[in-house]
Image 1: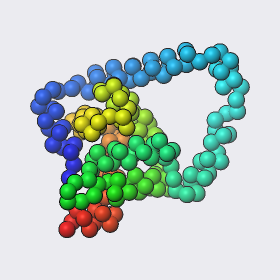
Image 2: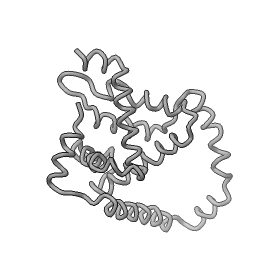
Image 3: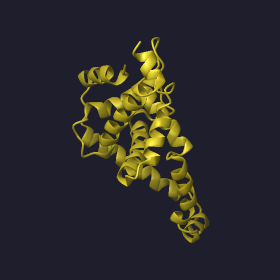
Length: 195
């Protein structure tokens, strides 16, 4: 069913990663990259951004629209969730994968309809951290990475699931649970997989 468990066992035999130490390195790199991106902006752009209305005022109509439809993810985030879930439950010769089961839509609706702001923040931050990890480990965003790159990124999290104090690990566990729930409550998961 999943590529993660098999590949993570192989990965841990080849090379043990000190995730806490390595995490510091990629977080530092991410923060540096974000800070450096502001250095290339002209001063007028930065000043204009400071004079702009508060983001919360702009986001209220969009947030209200998202809440009314049950949608939570931006199109880019939805695509990332789609690829993450497909990496966890890929299509094979026997059955469709998470994309075929529309698991990303299931998760989007669930998170969008949730009243739990902590859950919403976990998904926002978790998606950001997954992309940051991918850039650190593979030099590419998760979406630009090969299937092997994607499995390798998730394998790092799978190998460190006991570190539940880390947001990205909590996110990965939630992602797996929601992927399995969404898949096995879909017609693809019920009919294809169980036949």
